Image (tube, rainbow, N blue to C red; front, side, top):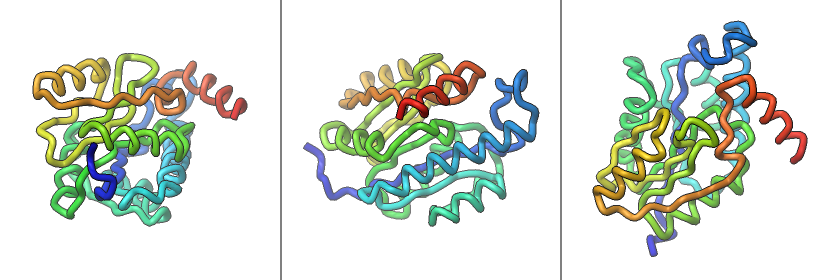
Length: 205
């Protein structure tokens, strides 16, 4: 069993809002997509802020509005001036948090607005038994949450089919993996159907 007293930080990578949710462009214009992204980020940060077991929250972004939202939740803002995609941002954020004394990092996307503190605590619980914890996305084979010990030799590989890639990487490195299967984590908002399903799920809460 892994120590319960570890310092675990949440890390939220955030794209520029003016580039957010391009796959929703058939139903939302640029301003509406930016508004959606801002709202979802606030929802996610609100859930994270209620998890007292976390040592802190960090948001890595080069978007000024995202940085303002992050600070309103007392989150540490990590600059990402040379944005090279999610995996570059996550790797950079993990390195910065490790150098600041973090033992592990919980990567939480900013577009899973139904997530609740209990879902995040489920990941923290799984981490007691494995140095890497994964939660899959409901579609595209992606990864919607990654909890990783800073000492683990493991590079983030988010994107379509990343859940299988992460599992294969952990297997190759002979690193135990914990899995968390929760509907609210699995649901991200990338397509019009996702938005409708998310609204329906919220109404069922």
